[in-house]
Image (cartoon, rainbow, N blue to C red; front, side, top):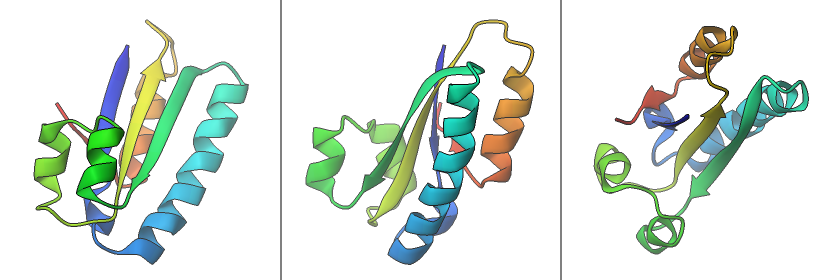
Length: 100
């Protein structure tokens, strides 16, 4: 099961996007190394062309108001893993919003 997220609080602010990217990467790497998630993909998106190349969905791009850069996240959850709720809480606490 894969869920997608956007970090709207930092849209258009490159330094903040980089800071959040580093922080959340460390946290998600730890979860991935422990086998709590089945991987993740974190994209630092700098332009409309890059958004298209990386197949960022229109729903996520619409939330940015056309501003760049932005941070986009896909987390591959393990089905029925007991830590799924805590992973969602971690992603939310990091400031990411779920993109339906």
